[in-house]
Image 1 (cartoon, helix red, strand yellow):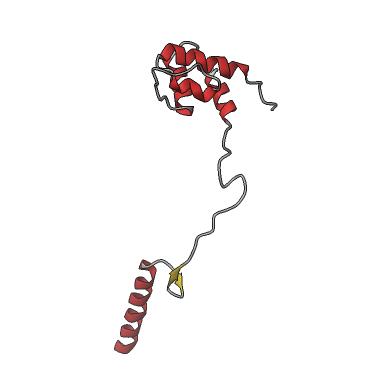
Image 2: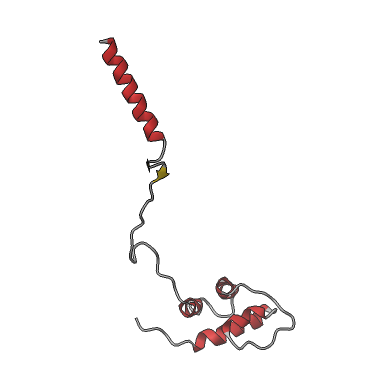
Length: 114
């Protein structure tokens, strides 16, 4: 009876110690496989879609400028040339001018088909 009890205790302790470490094969940990497809990763939005989303926020507000600044973080340059692309708007130092610059480019973007 005592030998059976000792055997059971040894087996339980071995099982408990085996659960503490991650499973491995040949001394290397097993790799977890992630699912494929659209459900696995969220769809990345294009810059144009993000800019158009900012247009839904009230015009001439700090919130709209913050929305644009999340897409293109500002890097003020006092000697910035006139913007030729939407990314150049981030160089404009004055907030009102930067907002007008972003608005001018965002309003020119055609709406994507649904």
